[in-house]
Length: 108
Image (cartoon, rainbow, N blue to C red):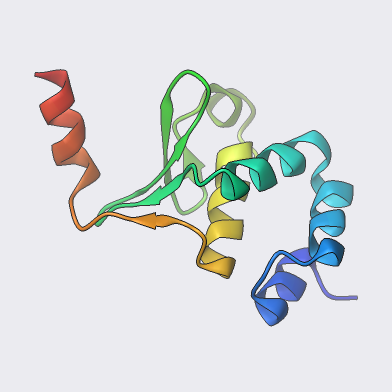
């Protein structure tokens, strides 16, 4: 049996069957990740993916995320799942800038 990611890659879209599998495999995290993608809260910068959360923006690079869930539990968090879904479906906002530069400007 293929993984949910294989199925998503083949279909290239969030079909009802793919969404149901994501919810089944990942539970509440999967539902929240789907919602982040549907709500357009996944951004692709030149250096990182960023997922806009309720209280902060979380940087995702590969299998690493800056959120507390990932940092303390070391497993796939909502934000990593959202990025994986967004990459497979092309459903992210593209920024032709470096996130680090944007962050530094906001911090100043």
